[in-house]
Image (cartoon, rainbow, N blue to C red; front, top):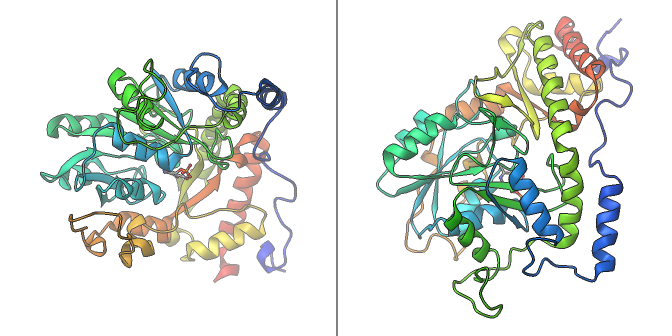
Length: 412
Ligand SMILES: Cc1ncc(COP(=O)(O)O)c(C=O)c1O
């Protein structure tokens, strides 16, 4: 008699686990109605009472930053940050291989050159050693990503930045509510950039934000998102060439509602993940990504754990994932492959507006073996909504994994 659900056996998880996503309630409804009836559907110049202004202040405070500028989306938040920090054509920016492609394409969109480096297999985050080894006389900054919301080794990265005179823009698109040594991600480097796209742990459907503690950078972020205006100057006085990257009042109305729940949800995810990690340690062939001492809260967009094929009967990650899905637990592979393996890099499809006279590097010769191996063989990702339930849900997820391990011979 087969035991595994993939072979016709009974399924471990036959009820919903975690939570639906997105979550919303009366705050969103009331805020949206307030915007509708106010007749003021954009922020204008009002940082005090507009929904956008209120969101900027509340979100910056939540992440421990002094200033916030709400932006249309996460990709444009990165572009805005690069412009505000003074990027010039041909400048090199160091980015990790394990991320969403926008970390690199935001650089290309401002005619800079992303240099892709490997990740640390212990944390799945940018390797500080690899980052330092990639520095050239054209390097101007580091763009670490708190991948899956796990805070990067910011102490080492800040030391490298100090040694080489570089800035740091933290791509915090996955790290709302995550803390590094007790400090909110996105408030540690020079600028932090967030995405509020629908899947993120704080969402307005689409949206983004830039945070900074630096008054001058805040002034430039404001101007670069607002067609070159400066605060306090006449409305039709434009000082720099800049786009319109303003968030709408509708988006901020929704984001403000989510922000009210973020602290509690972040604590729930973090606590459930710790419980799940204890369970993973008891199952042969899987293991958690161990928390470095600086990971004081891990509020993940997706959670990663390690699948070790040689200790799991030698089956592939794909077969493991299929067997788990049949047991009722759906998992993924993060972003599937290192970013430089995307056709845009392998086929050099940057389009005529990018790079100018600065020859782009050969991305095919930018090896990132750890990212490659982890994406292909080891890293298993799970959506954040699975961790919004209780420890009973964690037990079911662990039971599904343990069952596949115990009956792995059925999969060979
Ligand atoms: C690491 C990372 N950076 C940037 C972005 C871009 O954000 P958006 O989709 O809001 O443009 C994303 C989106 O998922 C992301 O995962």
